[in-house]
Amino acid sequence: MSCQTGRLRAVRAESVSHHQRRPFTAALLAAGLGSRLGGRPKAALQIDGHSILARLTTALREAGSADVSVVIGPYRNALRPLAVACGAHVVEHVHPDSSLIDSQRLALADHVARHAGADLLLVVADLPLLSATHITPLLQAWSRRPDDVDAMMPVVGGVRGHPVLLSWAAVRQIAVTPAHLGIRDWLASHPTAIRPLPVDEAAYITDIDTPADVDRLRAFVHPASVAWPEPGSSGR
Image (tube, rainbow, N blue to C red; front, side, top):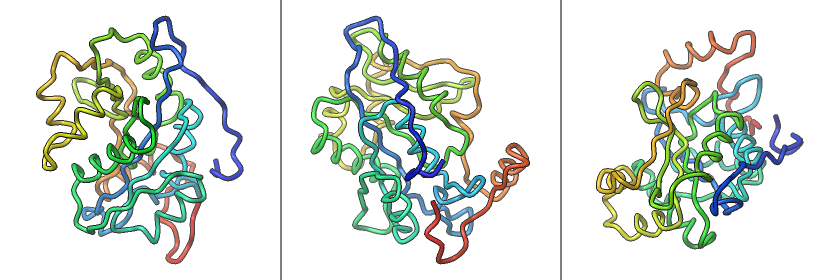
């Protein structure tokens, strides 16, 4: 699943509405501190030698994303080479103590600057089980949504997951809100513009925050290996 050598399948979302073939791009939010993991970049965790960042980038491309950007922060030395190897567009925080809202707003600003008119798919970069088979049904539902729906996300057992899809109209609105407000604030103030997608797969909500999460992942994917890259390794 190396980003450099993996053959990407162009799996395009089917549509029965005027939303058909509307372009979208994707942004991975990978600027977390990983403090509960002892200060590690979660997106660098490897499954059978392939980082979560590489796996997600491949999944997004296989699902049809025209472009993938990666927002990075305090672990730029570890994550930039991975993103570059995947051919992703790198967006870096200026301040090392950035928040999730800061990452969201950076991704939105980059999208507005480079992809005017396109919808945006946002995903946190610590979802190790998410694949194109999970992303594609969300895109299919997105293509069939009513005209007044500007946001969609999977919901597993009442828990909102990722990715989050935003229309171009929503992106423009959120981008001009005050700097301390994030996507969740916009969603809270626009409840009728949201279309949750009920799903059963845990991949939408299975993230990596603690050593216990890593242990559970290791047990789930066994006999595949789960390991942090060796210090100084460029990874893949």
